[in-house]
Image (cartoon, rainbow, N blue to C red):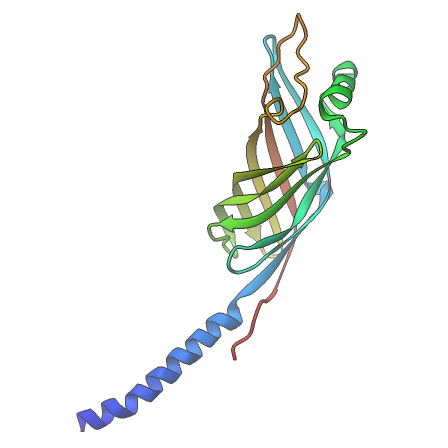
Length: 202
């Protein structure tokens, strides 16, 4: 009796596992993270021997598509021309001699992979890998990001360092003023979130 029950039970266990795996597949979702420029910002911090220079850039646009396995496509675009430190003379020098923003008007980040899981609700700490384009050149970077999701809204906070002089941009130091050869970047991207089924059970 026991052996007969066991033989009958095995097919049902197999069916249950198949249905369970199908449920997981059906639940797997792609996510579209649309950036709202009005809710997003880029802040930069540059040290010098006298004081710390702080400024901002405006986010132009952005949309990222994230697959269940962590693959990412899309990009976030920043308006290089919008760079503002509060000093007209300093900003003219930054745009003309360092960023050359008339020639390279956009700064972009194209993520291609997220290491770590983004929770459907609440905060998640992940690593984001991709290409950072500034001054017309792509640079491979991996940056830590804190992502917070709530319903159909999301916010990501990213901090990283740009060694601009090492990356071929001019250091604006003068005989009487010495500035750091790296700049700290704080990106806050926020917007709407849409999820849709990535694949269905067969």
